[in-house]
Image (cartoon, rainbow, N blue to C red):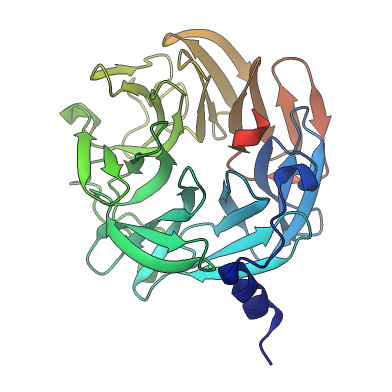
Length: 355
């Protein structure tokens, strides 16, 4: 007899599984992984005001999640160098299926769906050849892997779908790692990050590299506005005494690249954890858990700065931003605070239906 996971995957592939929507999962606006007081791990849906809409168990620490654009399904990725990702029915908490990275690969903790929800794209490390790869999974066929292509660089971390629905943007962090040496960075003297725009079929449409003095700046996390502006957060791999900026904004339509000099290496302890753009692409927020600080920029000028211990997750709302911390706080800049007995992990993922 097939086990429950295989049975559900078969139903999904034939289109017979219940097609539950996010409304049936409590209308969450965001997803976040967390750690419970007992040391277990979970994936939560959060409302606009920071209340928990659902809480589903995970077998290990999660990093980020990808939310299906229509159905109440989320893909929870293990923290790198994890080799699994779990597809959850967020209404029932059922594990629908589990994705396993191909031999010689590991996931980087991020993924994104196509606009119609039929494909999932995952960032991966082909570690023996030090190549960044994008895996392609067919959702309607039970999350079957159907293709792969180059990410355009080394160490692809975050990936987002562009508003045109026809292209992806990838943060190639530039850092070579191998599971045999854990999270040790193997190529710091020669590393070079880039921002790569890819067609859904895999060919490179555009690449953006930072100036030479940023050689040790690793582009890690992304946020995309409705107008196609891309905000990116970096993590510095060198001396922490310089003033190089860690936050950038790229406008592909105009070819302009802006760096926020107030979010620099010394100010943020060399590390930005997350980034979020407002819908119009003009207001940008970033966090540094190592510095315990959140910054907000308008047209790349600093307009707000707040001290928050262990702050990392951040997402845009209609009237500002919401952040999460490792101390269990969910804070909305419009005035709503919720305190939970959970340690929120790195990222707060907005649902398209939640904004």
